[in-house]
Image (tube, rainbow, N blue to C red):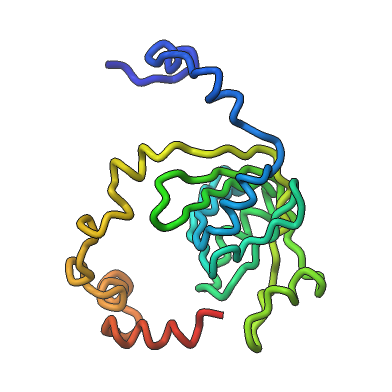
Length: 202
């Protein structure tokens, strides 16, 4: 089959979306969406740079680590990472974001799209302080599109099923893999890496 190069060609292969599928997209966070975010400890954050460079990155914390300021505003703290700043650089060039919230054990997920400001205001940063560590930047997200995803992808992947969990020993440690890929740094054991990360989470 030839490559598909147009929406018309794509639509020809699929049935039309059902009315509820189209109507479920909201322009604000209703009570169900707010509750979903309050329970979520994990979100995938998607960004794109001015030249189309794409990035999808995980963000996590205690449930509700992303704060619902109001029905059209989210606050997401940027915690310590590797300082590549891929996502944040993208947002300075193209301040649009896609978020996919997940809750362990729940097959459904929540998608939020919106516009972003990178803020350093003390009144935004300080509420996210953990001990002596506060985020350098808080993402202030203006919600534009939000909708609940069905659970088919999670069900197919069995992501939350204990029987589907993979033993960590199926892969070399991250330290070993990075040492082989880059030739830089120690080949940390899993225990060494986890111990180091515990001191660098916030």
